[in-house]
Length: 127
Image (cartoon, rainbow, N blue to C red; front, top):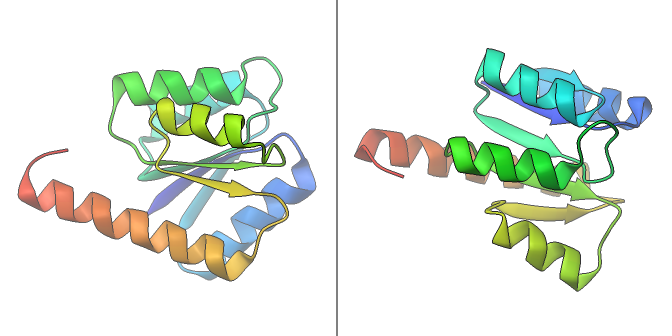
């Protein structure tokens, strides 16, 4: 399953992709919001891991666009761990919000949970 990682810190993006690939997923990455949206439209990933502080288009803009155009699950992965930021992410229909630094095991558990939920929705024929 393809997972899109949109993260401007290249070391962290590489780490996230490594973790995902090691768990058996296809991982693709973008380092800015515009490229993230372009890859999302081209590749139609099953899930998006999204940072908020991105160049060219903010993570908020990317989250809003994806949520308006699809049911692709989004996990925000951000150093912004303020309650208002988390609430804003959920209001934009992100499925989860993970604060940096994070546990790779817990992040993968959240990824698995959301992919299972998405598969169940697809089988049931609805959002």
